[in-house]
Length: 165
Image 1: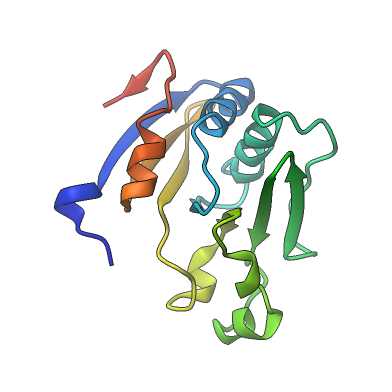
Image 2: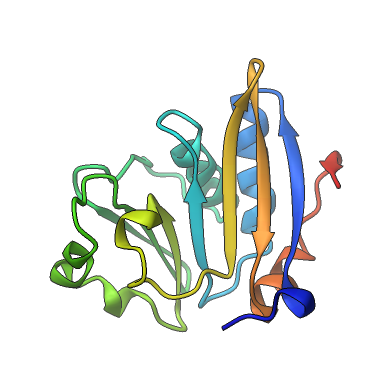
């Protein structure tokens, strides 16, 4: 359980276009540490997979990055880091999380990015970060909320030229 007054804080970023979303992802990548659990929130088409692509590019991954909507999880190994990109959109019941057998991916050596985490409400570990993407004009607004000491330590390493506080 986190203590909001000790660890919780947030940063907002105004992202003019897709390249700005990719740049935010690359900036976030520099701050990641094994063991992080990151929820990605936003409507369909809000940019969750684009942000994930930016994170992976920032980590040095040059391969194809696709939405795991049908596979439920896409695993990536970059150096000694295991990154799992989950998309739980197709879940109809939180118990499907248990049946899928994904719990083993949440460990001290992995970073887990989860789209549609609400579809497994109450069964996922507490997130370290929640990144919410909302379309705004021709771009989007991103909000990074932090919920743990490790998340806070990592988030303080994120630097972009134009954060909105």
